[in-house]
Image (cartoon, rainbow, N blue to C red; front, side):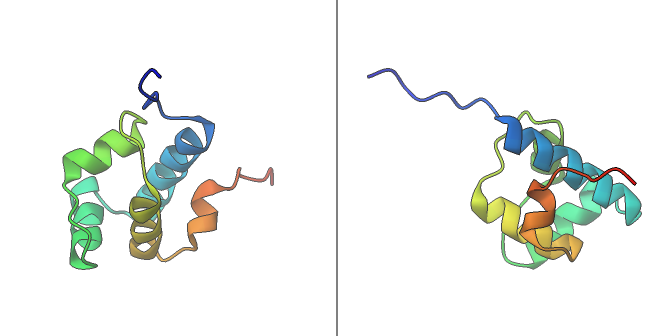
Length: 85
């Protein structure tokens, strides 16, 4: 059986986009958000966060939950499509 693809799928791309939007809305740099994530006990560098935001690195469930906590939102917010206003 061939190895499973590690490409980022549609949900990962959506989460990456929303993470970047929410981070910017809160006036946080990638370094600051990565610091918050690390302070919550999940080591993350700003390079890792940058790769997640650019959908060059998969965001696993643990990453998603702690990034959401650092952004003070539910993890579901990172997975939902934005609604038109």
